[in-house]
Image 1 (cartoon, rainbow, N blue to C red):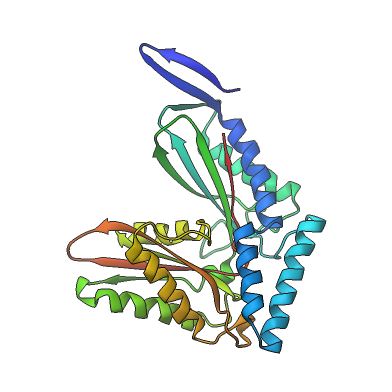
Image 2: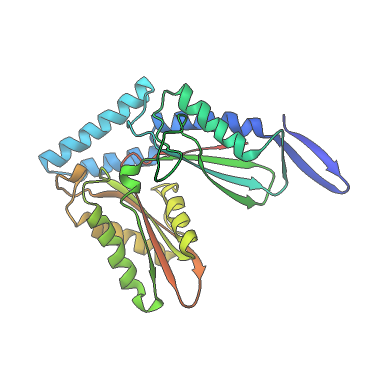
Length: 291
């Protein structure tokens, strides 16, 4: 239960972490069974522009696949991903009733069991060994103004994750260096990430922040643009250049190599210009809930 509690002159909203568990359980299932509407719309628009018989046929099968998933409430893809959990926690919230990390992992555990979702997480990166419940989640927290908790679940498949890359540019590489790197990364990926893909780009910050920016870019609606006109134009330009590669749906050639490209940026050091490219397949899944 959420309640108001007063401590001196400060008023904080209390939220039981069990509510976060329940929301993550539900969002894990929904994200794996239902593509976001903006992703569906982008695929349909690309199908209308695709005149090649093979490319058009592949997109038809992709559309049929997500329609079956919607109707039958089954996973869109057999790789139900590593659970990436983004938490925006209001600074006027007091989380009660247990450990937040444990609550998040319990939500993932329940969701993947209840939804009959494939468990794809190993407990050691080298020695392997499946954890059996798709935990631990990859958890990202951010403190924001307000008294709400916003939860986004983004299951990330590794056929596309493996095609991602980061490069620590010197400023002298300039804008052209960034452009070339984005195109080179997608071209090197080829058919491996199950195109048409979504491309998330992070520019700035530090080594780790650039990668996180690229991941967060994949959570943004494909119908949105970067608020900075310079980067909004760059998003359009890079999407066009990627589609000129001709990789096409599932790598069979065509006009549709990517259905979207989002860029997120941060200030950075005078001596650097980090850039990360996070590749996602056409099953770019994410669901958000607010407590």
